[in-house]
Length: 219
Image (cartoon, rainbow, N blue to C red; front, side):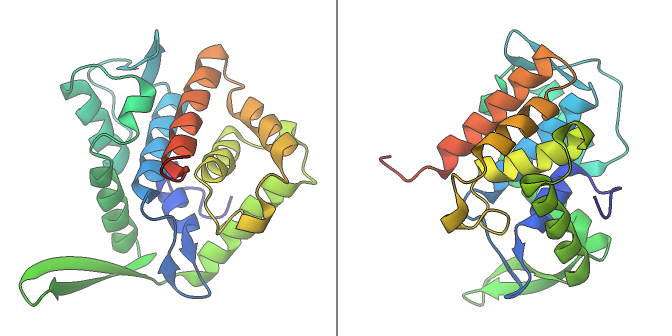
């Protein structure tokens, strides 16, 4: 993937930008997607492990060096135990806000301070590095559609695409294409769980949480 140094949650946040309109898509569930990406990366790094369905820190001292991932890892350590699915919505906006701040600091986004009703300060973000996001999306589409064999797709790229598809992120999978890539996504999900049954189970739980969040109310 382009900009491979970026974390999985950061890349998911960038992937949600519609570069033709310079606006963020995926609301109101983008924070769930970004949180699921952070949980996935921590699991892939084996800093969070599965303990009978519970997201559990592997130890009390390890860090990634990434402020967003380390912030979530600290939150999990300090909180009572939760299943993976439970961590997707829990305080998820904290993770999204941290990712946006990080991307602004690295020049991908531009932060614009405003006041709501001329009273309440808020921060809005605009996309700065359009070409980088277009390249990220093009590569993600190649992973989704092929022709690269799934065996040659990295765990991180497989997770990026399967999580975005589970969240019905329209910048990757337009509404009219939903359902067209089921077989490929199933193969990518298996690739994302190549580390073993525990990682496969984690992926299933996180994708299920995103699919549930994206479903229309009452569906």
